[in-house]
Every structure is written in structure tokens, then in C-alpha cells.
Length: 402
Image (cartoon, rainbow, N blue to C red; front, side, top):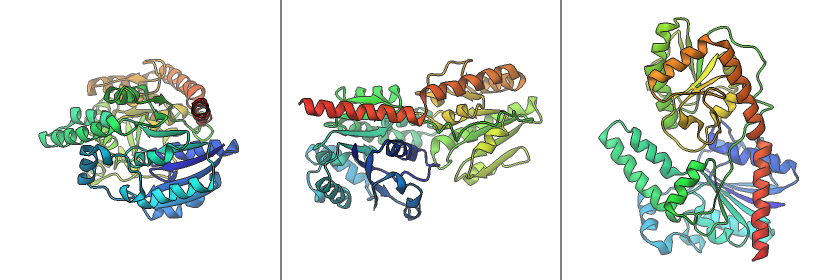
């Protein structure tokens, strides 16, 4: 099958969580002899140097600078329905991407056009409509902002989030009209999009995990160390890390003096690094997370913001590290409290569940085994690729039946 992939970002580096889908899906489909041409936006010169890390999975790769889009640009399209879906390159935010897509479509008869992203790529509907197509925003941004409004700590932050949410809701009410399918990671994201436009043809396909890479050695660590991972320039991760180090870990430390905390991920700001101590390690981005899983007795995810599925939780379960997490952290993952993870919402609950796990080896072992089994059964990238392959075939059949 021949696929044209139009992406909001390059498929590497993988520490940017949104790049996992285009990277792993392309790798899996290339192994099945798919021919994939990639057109992707980039906004960092380093992205150009990363191309050799993934170009073997594509027949061709072309990166295009991502255009700037001002608030005025967004408001103009939102208020003028006739401008929402351009029909010529000059009407689009990125004429260069438009022309690159036109060129590809003239050279090859693709079976499917696959767009990865939301507001960054939706405007190419007129070009994609010529063929069976699927667009993958992977989450509802308005749902993300709904939670941001709820958790805002100041009136100004709440007002700003509400304004952004209003714009996101406006766009998500029309942005996916005319596409064959709209793929999101969780049923909750699908419901949020359908609430804005009941005609949105949503399909839920989760993320996956490389279970061959994320495999534990089988040894349990000796010290009672807690772990949280994530890119800390992403506000939900920073909020969770600050909550953990400021409000939860000190109370655990009072009961378990030898406890340690690892906060691992890129771009920790000074406000987070200030908590570094003999008991709190904040190393920044590391080349391999597995050693931190191996030396941590359990993983704590106090996320209260965000949308979509959390790969950090899937990777943790694959590594058989027991998890204490908010229900939000487990969106899209069919976990059962006490069987796969321990759920907590308030700080008191987190402290209680963490102490319970630290004291109960048999419970840790049960969560570790059940978590790994769940990932192996439902969240491998091979299974995710199967679901995309089935979706491609379904929309191709529908087009042929018209």
C-alpha cells in the first residue's frame, strides 16, 4: 500500500511524546512493505540533522519550516467560514507545504492520505479529499483546556485558558468536516469532539509501547525510590512534578526517611531544579529511562492536566514498575484499581497509596505482573499498526463502494 503522510512534526526525537505515533506506525508499516512518503513541518534546525535516524522507514522525506500563525490568523478563519478550508496554495498558512502535497499527488497514485496533527494540517482537506484519508489529531485540545481552566490557580490564568478553550472549541467544531476518519487516542477525546460536532467520524486507536525495549531485568531495587518522568516544558508534567516534590513526597519522607525521588525529563526549569537535594534527583533529559525504572520501587503520576493517553504510564507498566496515579493519568488505559495500578486523586490519597505499596511487596508484584500483561495484550505498536491497517482498508472499501 502507498501512503502519503503529512505530519505536524518529524517522527524523531522520541522524547517528544507526540512523535511516537508517526515514528512507530511508519516503522511497523514499512516492515509490512508499505511505501510511505513523508512531508513534515519542523521548527528546530536540529530536526534536519535527525533525518538519518528514521529515513529508512520512508521512501522519501521532506521537511518544511512550520509557518507562524498569529491569534489574528486563527480568529479570521474562525469568523469567516469561506476561508476555513483553502482551495489554493496562496490561501493556506503554508503555501510551501501545499505545493509539496500537490507535487506528491501528481507523481504517485496513493492508496491513503494520512494527516497527523490538528490545526497544523487540517487545512489540506481539499487536497486529501481526492483519496481515502484519515486525520489524527490524537487528542481533543479543547478537552485539554477544559481541565486547564478547572485547575488554574489565578483568575488571570483561568481567563486566559477560557479564551484559548473558546477558540479550540470553535475550531474543533468544524476542523474535521469532510475527512473520512478522525483518530484520537481515547474514547473521552472522541466524546469531546462529538459533543462539538456530532458528525465527526471518530475512531479510537491508542498509542503503543515498544515492549522489546521496555523490558525489566527482573530485579527489584533495594531503596524506596519514587519516580516521575516527562518533558518539563510541557505544563501538565511540570505541574505534576511540582505537586509531587512539594506536596506529596515530603509527607512520604516523614514516614519513610530513607525514601528518594527521581524527577527525570528534559528542560526542568529553575523552579523545579530548586528542589534538588540529597533525596531529590532532577537530572534533566537522559538517553535511556530504563535504569531509572530499574532503581525505582514505584512510579507516581499525580497529573491533573492534559488529554489523550499517557505513554509514560504504558512504559512504566511495561517495565513492571508499580504505579500510583490519578485517573486522568490512565485515560484510555483499561486499568482496574488494585489490579493494574493504585488510583489516587487528592494528596492524602497519594501518600496513603504510596505508603501501602512501599510496605506491601506482594501488592507490588501483583501490579507489576498485571500491568505488563495488559500492555502486551493491548498496547504493543504491532497491535496499533494492525488497527491502522484495518482502518485504511475500511475507508478504501468505502470509497470504492461510492
